[in-house]
Image (spheres, rainbow, N blue to C red):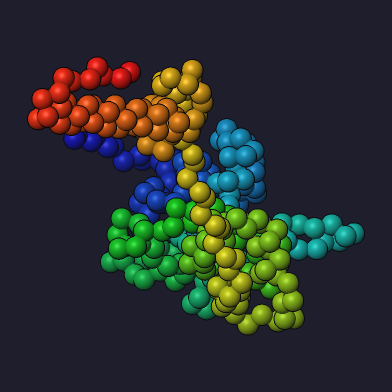
Length: 297
Protein backbone atom coordinates (compact mmCIF):
# COMPACT_ATOMS: atom_id res chain seq x y z
CA UNK A 1 0.00 0.00 0.00
CA UNK A 2 1.46 3.37 -1.09
CA UNK A 3 0.26 6.73 0.23
CA UNK A 4 1.31 10.12 -1.10
CA UNK A 5 0.44 12.99 1.24
CA UNK A 6 1.39 16.66 0.87
CA UNK A 7 0.72 18.80 3.95
CA UNK A 8 -1.36 21.87 3.01
CA UNK A 9 0.28 25.24 3.57
CA UNK A 10 -2.98 27.03 4.50
CA UNK A 11 -6.72 26.52 4.99
CA UNK A 12 -6.48 23.21 6.83
CA UNK A 13 -7.87 21.76 10.07
CA UNK A 14 -6.13 19.32 12.37
CA UNK A 15 -8.36 16.33 13.08
CA UNK A 16 -7.25 13.61 15.49
CA UNK A 17 -7.17 9.96 14.50
CA UNK A 18 -9.58 9.32 17.39
CA UNK A 19 -12.27 11.10 15.39
CA UNK A 20 -11.35 9.70 11.98
CA UNK A 21 -11.26 6.11 13.25
CA UNK A 22 -14.04 6.39 15.83
CA UNK A 23 -15.90 3.03 15.83
CA UNK A 24 -19.28 4.43 16.92
CA UNK A 25 -19.51 7.59 14.82
CA UNK A 26 -21.14 7.34 11.40
CA UNK A 27 -19.70 9.05 8.35
CA UNK A 28 -22.35 11.79 8.65
CA UNK A 29 -21.39 12.41 12.29
CA UNK A 30 -17.70 12.65 11.40
CA UNK A 31 -18.46 14.97 8.47
CA UNK A 32 -20.62 17.22 10.66
CA UNK A 33 -17.99 17.36 13.42
CA UNK A 34 -15.16 18.00 10.95
CA UNK A 35 -17.15 20.78 9.25
CA UNK A 36 -17.82 22.50 12.59
CA UNK A 37 -14.17 22.23 13.68
CA UNK A 38 -13.05 23.78 10.39
CA UNK A 39 -14.97 27.01 11.09
CA UNK A 40 -13.30 30.04 12.59
CA UNK A 41 -13.76 30.62 16.35
CA UNK A 42 -15.95 33.66 15.65
CA UNK A 43 -18.30 31.84 13.25
CA UNK A 44 -21.91 31.72 14.46
CA UNK A 45 -23.05 28.67 12.51
CA UNK A 46 -25.34 26.13 14.15
CA UNK A 47 -25.08 22.38 13.67
CA UNK A 48 -28.21 22.35 11.52
CA UNK A 49 -26.78 25.05 9.24
CA UNK A 50 -23.54 23.07 8.88
CA UNK A 51 -25.51 19.93 8.06
CA UNK A 52 -27.48 21.82 5.41
CA UNK A 53 -24.29 23.15 3.81
CA UNK A 54 -22.66 19.71 3.97
CA UNK A 55 -25.64 18.07 2.23
CA UNK A 56 -26.71 15.99 5.25
CA UNK A 57 -30.44 15.29 5.20
CA UNK A 58 -32.68 15.94 8.20
CA UNK A 59 -32.99 12.35 9.43
CA UNK A 60 -29.28 11.68 8.98
CA UNK A 61 -28.50 14.96 10.75
CA UNK A 62 -30.59 14.04 13.79
CA UNK A 63 -28.90 10.65 14.00
CA UNK A 64 -25.43 12.19 13.61
CA UNK A 65 -26.19 14.79 16.28
CA UNK A 66 -27.33 12.07 18.72
CA UNK A 67 -24.11 10.16 18.11
CA UNK A 68 -21.95 13.23 18.73
CA UNK A 69 -23.84 14.07 21.92
CA UNK A 70 -23.61 10.49 23.19
CA UNK A 71 -19.85 10.45 22.62
CA UNK A 72 -19.31 13.83 24.30
CA UNK A 73 -18.28 15.87 21.23
CA UNK A 74 -21.45 18.02 21.26
CA UNK A 75 -23.26 19.57 24.23
CA UNK A 76 -26.40 21.71 24.22
CA UNK A 77 -28.15 23.93 26.74
CA UNK A 78 -31.55 25.58 26.43
CA UNK A 79 -32.10 28.81 28.31
CA UNK A 80 -35.19 31.01 28.69
CA UNK A 81 -34.76 34.40 27.10
CA UNK A 82 -36.66 37.66 27.04
CA UNK A 83 -40.38 37.65 26.19
CA UNK A 84 -40.65 33.93 26.94
CA UNK A 85 -38.39 32.88 24.11
CA UNK A 86 -35.87 30.06 24.49
CA UNK A 87 -32.36 30.04 23.08
CA UNK A 88 -30.06 27.08 22.51
CA UNK A 89 -26.33 27.20 23.17
CA UNK A 90 -24.19 24.59 21.43
CA UNK A 91 -20.65 23.51 22.24
CA UNK A 92 -18.55 21.48 19.78
CA UNK A 93 -15.17 20.12 20.86
CA UNK A 94 -12.45 18.04 19.22
CA UNK A 95 -12.18 15.82 22.32
CA UNK A 96 -14.94 14.10 24.32
CA UNK A 97 -16.10 16.22 27.26
CA UNK A 98 -18.15 15.24 30.28
CA UNK A 99 -21.11 17.40 31.24
CA UNK A 100 -19.05 19.11 33.97
CA UNK A 101 -16.13 19.75 31.61
CA UNK A 102 -18.45 21.17 28.98
CA UNK A 103 -19.99 23.54 31.54
CA UNK A 104 -16.51 24.67 32.56
CA UNK A 105 -15.62 25.46 28.94
CA UNK A 106 -18.94 27.22 28.34
CA UNK A 107 -18.56 29.36 31.43
CA UNK A 108 -14.97 30.31 30.64
CA UNK A 109 -12.98 27.71 32.59
CA UNK A 110 -11.07 24.72 31.24
CA UNK A 111 -10.22 22.95 34.48
CA UNK A 112 -7.03 24.98 35.08
CA UNK A 113 -8.21 28.35 36.31
CA UNK A 114 -10.71 30.50 34.45
CA UNK A 115 -8.85 30.84 31.14
CA UNK A 116 -10.77 29.55 28.09
CA UNK A 117 -8.84 26.87 26.21
CA UNK A 118 -8.83 28.86 22.97
CA UNK A 119 -7.13 31.83 24.65
CA UNK A 120 -4.00 29.88 25.65
CA UNK A 121 -1.20 30.31 23.06
CA UNK A 122 0.41 27.10 21.78
CA UNK A 123 3.46 26.09 23.76
CA UNK A 124 6.80 25.37 22.17
CA UNK A 125 8.40 22.06 22.99
CA UNK A 126 7.11 18.65 23.89
CA UNK A 127 3.43 17.75 24.25
CA UNK A 128 1.64 18.43 27.53
CA UNK A 129 -1.39 16.90 29.19
CA UNK A 130 -4.57 18.47 27.88
CA UNK A 131 -6.65 20.47 30.32
CA UNK A 132 -10.05 18.93 29.55
CA UNK A 133 -11.33 15.84 27.82
CA UNK A 134 -10.58 12.19 28.23
CA UNK A 135 -8.78 9.51 26.23
CA UNK A 136 -10.61 7.54 23.60
CA UNK A 137 -12.59 4.65 25.04
CA UNK A 138 -11.60 1.11 24.17
CA UNK A 139 -13.24 -0.28 21.07
CA UNK A 140 -15.04 -3.60 20.75
CA UNK A 141 -11.97 -5.15 19.12
CA UNK A 142 -9.82 -4.18 22.10
CA UNK A 143 -12.13 -5.40 24.85
CA UNK A 144 -12.76 -9.05 25.70
CA UNK A 145 -16.51 -8.45 26.00
CA UNK A 146 -18.03 -6.87 22.86
CA UNK A 147 -21.02 -4.55 23.34
CA UNK A 148 -24.57 -5.83 23.23
CA UNK A 149 -25.95 -5.92 19.65
CA UNK A 150 -28.73 -3.51 20.66
CA UNK A 151 -26.40 -1.16 22.56
CA UNK A 152 -26.66 1.56 19.92
CA UNK A 153 -30.46 1.54 20.18
CA UNK A 154 -30.15 1.45 23.96
CA UNK A 155 -27.87 4.49 23.89
CA UNK A 156 -30.32 6.37 21.63
CA UNK A 157 -33.19 5.48 23.96
CA UNK A 158 -31.31 6.69 27.05
CA UNK A 159 -30.28 9.91 25.33
CA UNK A 160 -33.92 10.53 24.38
CA UNK A 161 -35.14 9.93 27.94
CA UNK A 162 -32.56 12.06 29.76
CA UNK A 163 -32.88 14.89 27.23
CA UNK A 164 -36.34 15.63 28.63
CA UNK A 165 -35.44 15.23 32.32
CA UNK A 166 -32.91 17.71 33.72
CA UNK A 167 -32.38 15.67 36.91
CA UNK A 168 -31.02 12.76 34.86
CA UNK A 169 -28.24 14.55 33.00
CA UNK A 170 -25.92 11.74 31.84
CA UNK A 171 -22.56 12.23 30.18
CA UNK A 172 -21.58 10.41 27.02
CA UNK A 173 -19.51 8.00 29.11
CA UNK A 174 -22.50 7.27 31.38
CA UNK A 175 -24.76 6.61 28.39
CA UNK A 176 -22.24 4.20 26.87
CA UNK A 177 -21.91 2.40 30.20
CA UNK A 178 -25.68 2.07 30.71
CA UNK A 179 -26.57 1.33 27.08
CA UNK A 180 -26.34 -2.51 27.45
CA UNK A 181 -28.89 -2.42 30.28
CA UNK A 182 -31.26 -0.28 28.21
CA UNK A 183 -30.67 -2.67 25.30
CA UNK A 184 -31.89 -5.57 27.44
CA UNK A 185 -35.11 -3.63 28.06
CA UNK A 186 -35.64 -3.26 24.33
CA UNK A 187 -34.76 -6.92 23.78
CA UNK A 188 -37.46 -7.90 26.28
CA UNK A 189 -40.12 -5.92 24.41
CA UNK A 190 -40.14 -2.67 26.41
CA UNK A 191 -41.18 0.49 24.60
CA UNK A 192 -39.52 3.89 24.87
CA UNK A 193 -42.51 5.16 26.86
CA UNK A 194 -42.15 2.31 29.37
CA UNK A 195 -38.42 2.98 29.71
CA UNK A 196 -39.06 6.69 30.29
CA UNK A 197 -41.73 5.94 32.90
CA UNK A 198 -39.41 3.56 34.77
CA UNK A 199 -36.53 6.05 34.86
CA UNK A 200 -38.37 9.30 35.53
CA UNK A 201 -41.35 8.38 37.73
CA UNK A 202 -41.16 9.61 41.36
CA UNK A 203 -37.66 11.04 41.07
CA UNK A 204 -36.42 12.97 44.12
CA UNK A 205 -36.24 16.73 43.86
CA UNK A 206 -32.44 16.65 43.74
CA UNK A 207 -30.60 13.71 42.18
CA UNK A 208 -27.08 13.44 43.54
CA UNK A 209 -25.95 10.70 41.17
CA UNK A 210 -27.92 10.56 37.89
CA UNK A 211 -25.88 7.61 36.61
CA UNK A 212 -26.29 5.71 39.88
CA UNK A 213 -30.07 6.07 40.10
CA UNK A 214 -30.44 5.29 36.41
CA UNK A 215 -28.40 2.09 36.77
CA UNK A 216 -30.39 1.09 39.86
CA UNK A 217 -33.74 1.55 38.12
CA UNK A 218 -32.64 -0.15 34.93
CA UNK A 219 -31.51 -3.18 36.96
CA UNK A 220 -34.25 -3.32 39.59
CA UNK A 221 -37.18 -2.72 37.23
CA UNK A 222 -35.87 -4.91 34.40
CA UNK A 223 -38.87 -6.58 32.68
CA UNK A 224 -39.06 -10.35 32.49
CA UNK A 225 -37.65 -12.05 29.39
CA UNK A 226 -40.08 -12.75 26.59
CA UNK A 227 -41.33 -16.38 26.48
CA UNK A 228 -39.61 -18.58 23.97
CA UNK A 229 -41.54 -19.07 20.77
CA UNK A 230 -42.68 -22.59 19.94
CA UNK A 231 -41.05 -24.08 16.82
CA UNK A 232 -43.09 -23.68 13.67
CA UNK A 233 -44.90 -26.90 12.65
CA UNK A 234 -44.11 -28.63 9.39
CA UNK A 235 -46.37 -27.64 6.46
CA UNK A 236 -49.17 -29.93 5.35
CA UNK A 237 -48.27 -32.58 2.78
CA UNK A 238 -50.40 -34.67 0.36
CA UNK A 239 -50.36 -38.37 1.14
CA UNK A 240 -48.81 -40.64 -1.53
CA UNK A 241 -50.59 -43.75 -0.22
CA UNK A 242 -53.91 -45.35 -1.19
CA UNK A 243 -56.18 -42.79 0.54
CA UNK A 244 -56.37 -40.57 -2.48
CA UNK A 245 -54.06 -37.73 -1.45
CA UNK A 246 -55.30 -36.93 2.04
CA UNK A 247 -53.49 -33.90 3.55
CA UNK A 248 -51.47 -34.62 6.70
CA UNK A 249 -48.78 -32.91 8.77
CA UNK A 250 -45.58 -34.98 8.80
CA UNK A 251 -43.46 -35.39 11.89
CA UNK A 252 -40.32 -36.35 10.01
CA UNK A 253 -39.81 -37.34 6.37
CA UNK A 254 -43.00 -39.40 6.01
CA UNK A 255 -44.67 -39.36 2.60
CA UNK A 256 -47.87 -41.22 3.62
CA UNK A 257 -50.46 -40.43 6.25
CA UNK A 258 -50.83 -42.45 9.44
CA UNK A 259 -53.82 -44.42 8.13
CA UNK A 260 -52.01 -45.52 4.97
CA UNK A 261 -48.90 -46.42 6.94
CA UNK A 262 -51.01 -48.51 9.37
CA UNK A 263 -52.83 -50.26 6.50
CA UNK A 264 -49.56 -51.03 4.78
CA UNK A 265 -48.03 -52.44 7.97
CA UNK A 266 -51.16 -54.50 8.76
CA UNK A 267 -51.39 -55.90 5.24
CA UNK A 268 -47.75 -56.95 5.32
CA UNK A 269 -48.17 -58.72 8.67
CA UNK A 270 -51.39 -60.56 7.68
CA UNK A 271 -49.97 -61.84 4.40
CA UNK A 272 -46.88 -63.08 6.21
CA UNK A 273 -48.96 -64.87 8.85
CA UNK A 274 -51.19 -66.54 6.20
CA UNK A 275 -48.19 -67.75 4.25
CA UNK A 276 -46.63 -69.21 7.39
CA UNK A 277 -49.90 -70.99 8.31
CA UNK A 278 -50.23 -72.51 4.82
CA UNK A 279 -46.66 -73.83 4.96
CA UNK A 280 -47.33 -75.41 8.40
CA UNK A 281 -50.51 -77.13 7.28
CA UNK A 282 -48.81 -78.53 4.15
CA UNK A 283 -46.06 -80.01 6.29
CA UNK A 284 -48.59 -81.70 8.59
CA UNK A 285 -50.49 -83.26 5.67
CA UNK A 286 -47.30 -84.53 4.12
CA UNK A 287 -46.38 -86.24 7.39
CA UNK A 288 -49.83 -87.91 7.60
CA UNK A 289 -49.80 -88.94 3.95
CA UNK A 290 -52.78 -86.81 3.09
CA UNK A 291 -52.98 -84.72 -0.06
CA UNK A 292 -52.51 -81.04 0.42
CA UNK A 293 -55.70 -79.02 0.56
CA UNK A 294 -56.05 -76.21 -1.94
CA UNK A 295 -55.03 -72.87 -0.57
CA UNK A 296 -57.84 -70.60 0.49
CA UNK A 297 -58.03 -67.16 -0.87
